Length: 257
Image 1 (cartoon, rainbow, N blue to C red):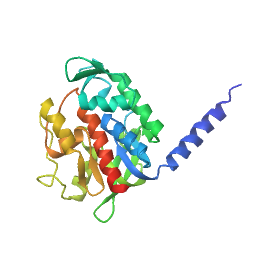
Image 2 (image 1 turned 135 degrees about the vertical axis):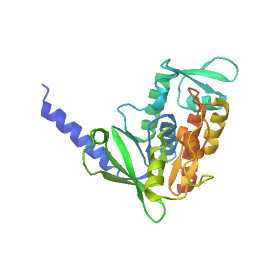
Image 3 (image 1 turned 120 degrees about the horizontal axis):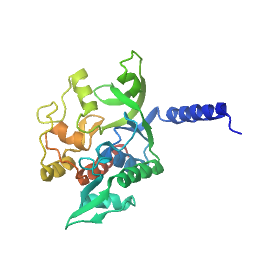
Image 4 (image 1 turned 180 degrees about the horizontal axis):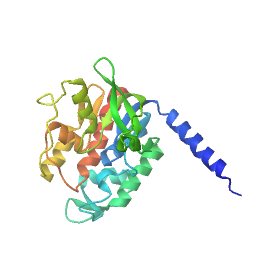
């Protein structure tokens, strides 16, 4: 016998229990693309309490679609080491290049992040930041459906010691901080530098270099790092994204632990 009331109660009770456990954490990761997922894995593996918020129904960001909906992606030798650790299969193509099934990559990274202890919530948007004494101290969240419908519904807050903007090209979290607080970022101009056109070789290198703290308590990773610091985009090669996720985790772990 199946009782619909029990099903409904189970979902509501367990979801409420899960989100209540994530209202005060070490790190909030904004965006469930490759860099955000990898960051969540290594942060959780390092012993920190991590929650990731993804505004869309599915996690994975641009990795799902590979290149122009050919759901294969490419990684280089260094990026391959991340996938090897996570048990994700890679296939050699030419020297220094490996192909990966995009679906296996996304699902594999997500699975490992959750098993490491990260909590992942989809369909939730980070619409604002909590700032205390010139430092980011948390995020403001709301249902994505509320945002899409332009409903006047007040949000809730999650407090954190560090926040990672892994929202990709839009760098939504850094833009909120710049727009609302008029602060000076740790960029050459003190403002968002903006994303340049595609140049994969330079972009892959700069993604890693630009992964850093952009304002006290706020870090950028993945494509958002290049958009913040004014470098190029790279297209469907994902080694830099994966390595960026690990680097931002290492930076935060060294600071918080």
